[in-house]
Amino acid sequence: MSELLPPGLLLVLSAPSGAGKTTLARKLLEVTPNTHFSVSVTTRRPRGREQQGLDYDFVDTETFQRRIERGEFVEWAEVHGHFYGSPESSVARARATQGLTIFDIDVQGGQAIKRKHPDAVLVFVLPPSIEELERRLRERRTDSDETIRRRMLAARSEMERGVASYDYIIVNDDFERAFGELRSIVVAERCRRGRVNLERLFTERLPGQG
Image (tube, rainbow, N blue to C red; front, side, top):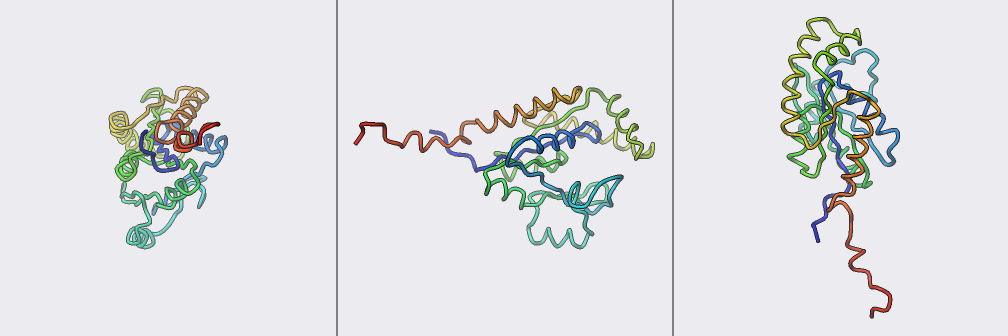
């Protein structure tokens, strides 16, 4: 019989900005029981309609550094002069409740979680094309041309690393289809050998046994 994996499912979603991963994550959170969204901690300022505690936990650099020293992050990194991190408490919650925790983070963070928790499931979301990705970014009307140019350069690198190292790839050219694929991944992973506890089934006595 296979060795049991740790309880709970750690689901990492990564994508270039504008590919739609956050919308997919929020929809999965809405329709999947016993699911928790890991709110990342960051030192950057809120953008647009981002809300404290919902989109990110916005803190100052000193607070972030103290959390690093206390070992409160399962992963953290400095990106473009700002710190980002995923709280260790999100992993603990998935383990304690045997539920699903969704991490909406970049490839660097996803790979760090995978190194610490090999049972984590990594899903990379791709846009239909580079042209469509740029169109979505410009449609937001929240970034300057220079910011969009930097995001597009970063997107190519992120996509290359994600495709090369992640467990699953979803092309988000149609939201409902992409969401159906994401939900299917969750269902399949919950049925993975090692996640299903068969110990009771094989140790129970059959009727008529001593």
